[in-house]
Length: 163
Image (cartoon, rainbow, N blue to C red; front, top):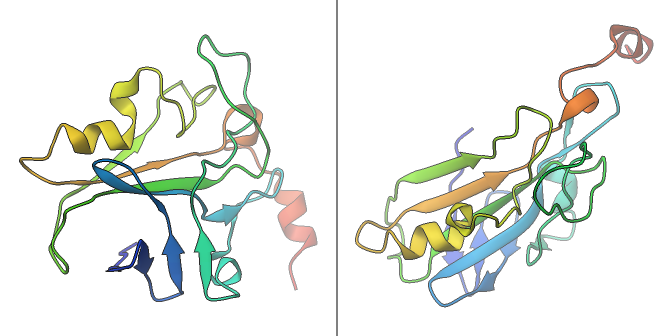
């Protein structure tokens, strides 16, 4: 997937609409951007068009983590509708500048983890950008389904929904 966006007053103009984020000392954070609907035991459904039905979305807080077994680290709220991503951009980037993109996919053996996980803080997109100011970078973190919800889907359910 190729994503292009232009900065507009604390927002990113995309082909679908504007994503509004929040500013920190070094970055603009676009948090909790839902990228698909998680249908239990079925493939996820893209929802980019639906999310921009009013022309913009507010992306100022992390989405919930995917359901998981008890982790050794603190995990925030959990929900099956957990397919969210977060985009962190350097605050002082030049318009139309091409920057490298770092996509961080949390570990956890497909059992635990979350994109909003800030322990250790080194994995936080804002901290990565702050430490890379000599070479600006865009950071994307994302959630993916875990445990029994991860790669198990029932073909019978898919066949029932064939039109």
